[in-house]
Length: 326
Image (cartoon, rainbow, N blue to C red; front, side, top):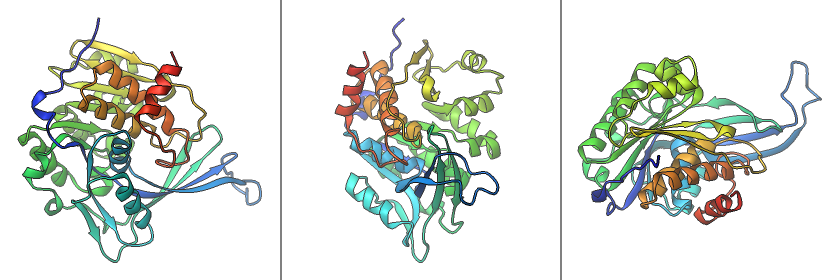
């Protein structure tokens, strides 16, 4: 069975493909040969040290423009030492930052990521509670009317803003006829499960990894979760499964998207890059299967760099990886 998705024709003329709302941070990625243990003062050498802009909304918006799309970012940022590289990358990538709220006198947000030789990683964060997205910072309705898709990341109501602010974004997106994309996060399903479920009920595109989808559905296994999801109309669920690819679920059925083999440095931002490529391709009129394949290939290519955005590639590189893997 060939599963289809019909992108609304009335949205094609809108100038912004993805309006992303949520987190942006500076990453310090520390690659170690093995995980530190207690007392390892002299036995945990660092193999590389990288700084990279990151954060889920940042990654989606930048990846979209690198892949030939148009994006805008709504978030809050400081003006100090943790914020400069982020603003440089946004300008270099051509992301619309008209509604990036800058808070003077604050350094910004930093996350320190330990990554090992297998590509696994863990995070320590410094999140400034004063750098918050407030409801008065949300773009007016006419700005939402320029966007095809409004994407809400899983940290937008956890560490970036609050539920009221995100509700305003969702309501304006729906009122202006935008498609709504929502990505989960482990902190969101752990501390804001009911609100996360509400967002997924309203969304046209629902993205979650296996752990997140089990929490949202209450299922005991991935198979049970897939069978419990019954999206109606044009609604899509995409379960991101890392090296096992992804599962796309529509009202017509489901299909598996294969993963692509690359030399992995780390897996940071693979999921965000999958989302960006998938949605950007749909915005360009590509069919559902091709868009999903591009998402998977782009997510794989993101693993070739240290941190979220250090490995630069375009849609031609994505398509080349797909062709070479056949």
